[in-house]
Image 1 (cartoon, rainbow, N blue to C red):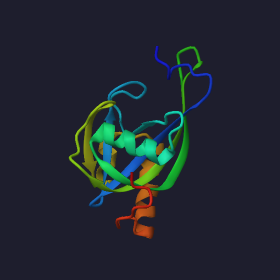
Image 2: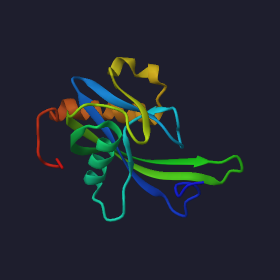
Image 3: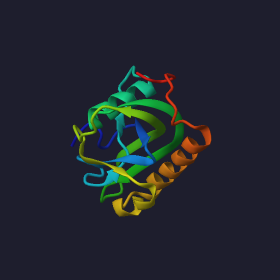
Length: 156
């Protein structure tokens, strides 16, 4: 058992919907919970760490990419129960739109694989319904607000 399991309070996590060239970066989780499932890159916020700094760090660690962290897309609660009905994992996840990725994309640390996925092929990755909704919402936000343009607002 690790310090994420059976927490006494929810843990705060951040996720990034990284858009480049009309595609989104997906990460296959390399550890529990959700080991082997495709999702968005991200992870837990450390004590004393600003949210956009935590997301930038997690994306760099997991994918090798540096990004511009944009606006919040969605805030989700993910609660997973064990066989006895006890809360085994409880995360509050804040997903952000991220653009302008630089670097060489490669899976590392908590992910076993990454890929750039076309929005019209997302069903192939068996994403959770809430992840699909976040991605759709991020694409709409990206298109509406032209967040594909460089910005130094939250670049770390």
